[in-house]
Length: 253
Length: 253
Image (tube, rainbow over all chains, first blue to last red; front, side, top):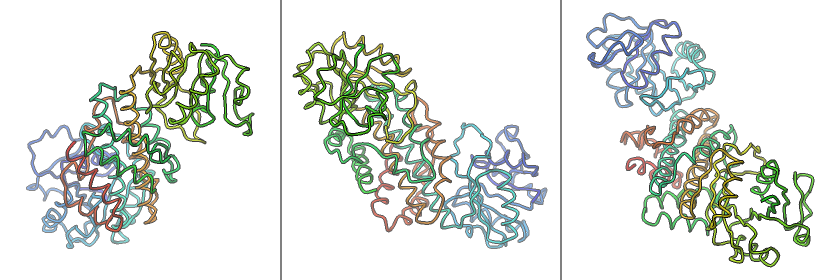
């Protein structure tokens, strides 16, 4: 696993390329178009017409979930079946890679990649990996353990659940922060006043159940406070629905 | 404001007492019952029968929201109208303190206080305060600025909105963490794998809109992934409802 062809020009490829090339791998990025500024990428870039210039042992498909099938089908006409092939999707089975390839797998970092976000070293980024064959599993294990201290070998179903949980713990949580931000903004209250509690709530989580940290009106069954909160959301029915549903969830958890 | 009578034996009083006595105030705690172990409290404790032993300039009612009215009514028979009186509720108007008292106000720390949680210094805990009179406002401003670097003078309506927002950003977020925990547990996936993304999502918040950090299927309008997620929640209708509602919120934010 010395020469890697990384397919894709998005956030995932952008964050992954420097991690791989820092690990003594010869990384080339394959992109659909060549017109974007090449010097911004720390590794060699090629377009589809230049595919005969590379002989990768490993293909990494850092592309949209629904492009994994079509792109791996196209690569199947160029590279031999023995080539190791990974995709980087949390939500997609390894089997969505074209069956021409004998060694199919997944490398999924549990991380929210935003353009403009800082590129941190990946040593503390959990890496979920999967391989359909023992050969790929061995190589991939060495690679992920070289990249991060937190690695998890999980099958398609477990990875898919973990992807759902990451969505809940990151995207949905961020939506609640935004809901708070909007309510503060309407009344000229600085959102900064909430940053310490936001961070404390996240920081006190342990591998154990978050339930042990639950406080608040819904948890205490304090209906008077809940009614007062709902009155404040009277003119925002969608936010009131979120309030009711999550209070109900807390009461049942 | 030298002698303080702190009313209540709950988490708020427990966390507030050492902060106040560290600031050269003479703090006495008034509790309903005396049988609990006294040595655990760092300050003097009394029960109602001993009220004639103290002459506080400041009363702090660290009691349940619906006890503020009745308890301040009872204290009104003992202490003069000039005594400064605060409650510590984010959700309750200052006017719920008995009108016998001329100087009524609020001191509300934006913090989730859990028994067994570490007692941190309050210098970085946002303190929201309010006073109905200029006399109380001046004294209270000095006190809160001595306790914390983050202080906010906010009226009843603003404080009430901020309390709602703290509930959303802390209790509701914690409920989502617990939802993730349960889904992981069902499939023997370590919840620890999510701790880095949980912390990163909280840590990257700034005083600006959280929306700028939004990623994920709902944000991209990726209905295929959302359908796959919902299939995983097929047998848990309440969790599926949370998923649908928050995805819809993200799409509209």
